[in-house]
Image (cartoon, rainbow, N blue to C red):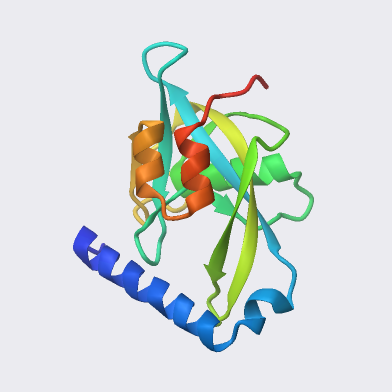
Length: 171
């Protein structure tokens, strides 16, 4: 596993690479429509109904802090796909809200070297179960933090704003 310093350096280099690539070929950003992803905004109540913690995980490649998210899944509704991503990437299960509570956009660096704009629909997931054995265990770090700390750690501006102001909605 990379050290935090190495992960930050890799993340910074990758960010610079993405921006340089887009500057050279801006048509890539606008040539295709935005791709959809579904994210799980995982939270749990800490001491009482007013005090929550948010779950962040690290990405497998750069080690930057993100939320569990992924591509649409055949035969699964968006909220189900978000819940599956939370289970596979972080080992958490719980009560997922069927309608999105928000969305954000970001640039996804694909394995083939291309960059695509993505819209992530966010589904709140109140965590009821945390397991140590899950599909991507050992490939990611997990951390439970306050909404303010979660907002400080993630890179995407729209997600930062959403996290710092997050209040769980009724199912």
